Length: 204
Image 1 (cartoon, rainbow, N blue to C red):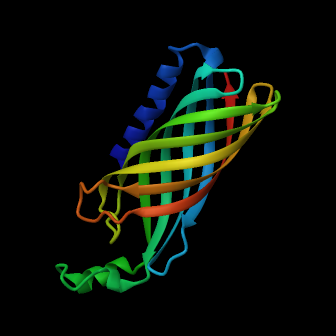
Image 2 (spheres, helix red, strand yellow):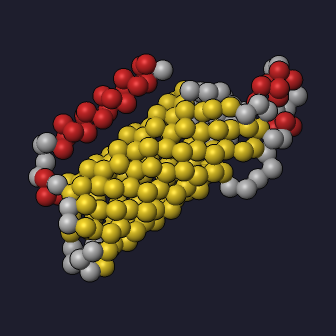
Image 3 (cartoon, rainbow, N blue to C red):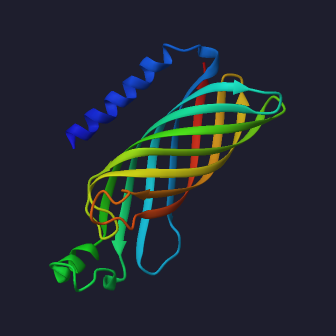
């Protein structure tokens, strides 16, 4: 756990180092809180809440749109339980023990570095709407029947709405998130969640 916390802190301070090397009028730095759950199904439950640090950098601006890249270190706290124990098939080694273990409610922690691209459409001087896509590596700390512990990836697509108040910007966004390991480990069914996020950022 201490190594993962150290990794998160290195990323956090790395973001600030990057922010000091670019033009500040194109930068915004903020924090987000979000929560969500899996799409309705009979096989498992998964709920999550997460915290992000967000660094935005505007790379281009046209008459109608703004284009931004963003870096989002994230800590995600999930709760998962297998409901359909037949998901663990008899041909798997120690399948009875796995069924007993996986059907228990458990905590799953993820440590993520999202890298994203955002297209923003200003509406007047105060409001804007945007579409966001991101992908990033993560480390998960718990074996489940759907995803092995260790290295994986998070893919996110979201739509959002912003309100600008001088240097502060308030955000709300709705998104879809997929987590899997691209077949790098044995269990790779992954998790799919729908999420809501709230954020505040300071435009430098």
